[in-house]
Amino acid sequence: MFDITLICMGKLKEKFYLSAAQEYAKRLGGYCAFHLIELPECRLPENPSAAEIAAGLNKEAEAILQKLPKNAWFCIFTPEGKLLSSEALAAKMGEIKLSGRSGACFLIGSSFGIAPQIKEKADFKLSMSPMTFPHHLARIMVMEQLYRAEAIQAGSKYHK
Image (cartoon, rainbow, N blue to C red; front, side, top):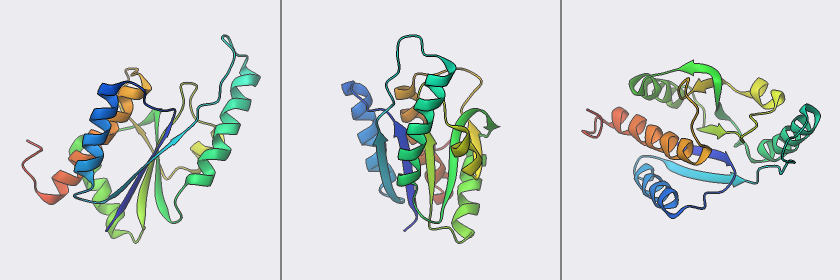
């Protein structure tokens, strides 16, 4: 079974987000081995300097690198990434499954972004939208799109 890992900086606290995440994790489990990894976001002062932000992102990068699955295709969500439709994401996931990779790993960075060394390591950079979303909502949206991509590949009626 194909592995899908979602690494997220920060923890969900609100019950409605937790409930939605649990539901999509359960649904994804019908198509793949789904793993959700939550890593702590680096705490920064109220108005951090560029150097403090860079140091925080580097610290987060160390934690991310330790959790990246071996031989997995690695995709980050970033504003400068490529926009894909749900169908295009499903097709991309299908290509990855045929490529010999053991799985796919997706990363939602912290509110300050993603360290440059992590961006360089990514096989693909994906943008959710030109709009800005709260990170907790972005996680639910990503999980739904991963589920939709799997459902599209399986020929399910979920995607209309």
